[in-house]
Length: 309
Image (cartoon, rainbow, N blue to C red):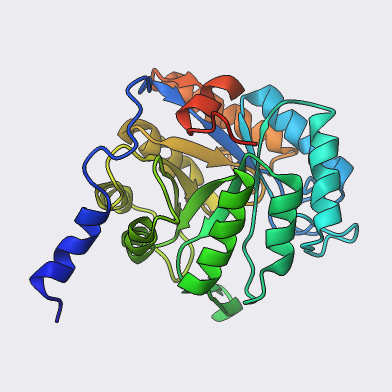
């Protein structure tokens, strides 16, 4: 049973309006594009990029369609995932020759050893790096086949989080706090209390992963109540719920993410032929609700990236 002092600890760690930026235009929306991921392959969608050049070309398509941030996993030329610092460095170089979009490198791994992740954060210094905020069952179930397509534990202990966060802090890289459930969002407070995580904060609320929070309006309402006031947030809707969840985030004042890592299909059910097609839909949705698509410079300000890499 929690003591009264313990129940107050999270609120003491993040006072009201911590990190709030008064210049924030609430109508501006940052669109992130997750261009490739690590699970889907070209047998499922021919447009998924593998090589650094292909990833960079997709980043350019996303940028042209309205994205100001790209979330990037690295792959080997055969499509298998890699954490090679050299590959991440080449991706950065290829993207930079094509467009000024902000880079967000994934650090997710099922392994405890994050040596390579820390290396490419320190060496490539993307503007942002994703930071998974809690351990969970990470699974996909097929109702049709009555079996799991995959079933694993995604371990993210505080020790692992702090190692990655330390590399980000040393390199001037902004952590994007990926929260698959409410406990992940609540669980940031010891890191704030230790001073290793500092406002302004940027959250990504992932919905519709088995083992995480469901794709409901109430899920986002609860997550945004738990996060410290003044934080930036976006929704990541996995699979075809994506478009409904993007609409939800837009109404609630959040930012949005689209891309082939999260969802392969357009709202009409057709498979996307590029990340650009998905971002075009997201940008149209932003405008249709009366909001504005943030430019790269505006996104840099909104996400608190001034003075960072």
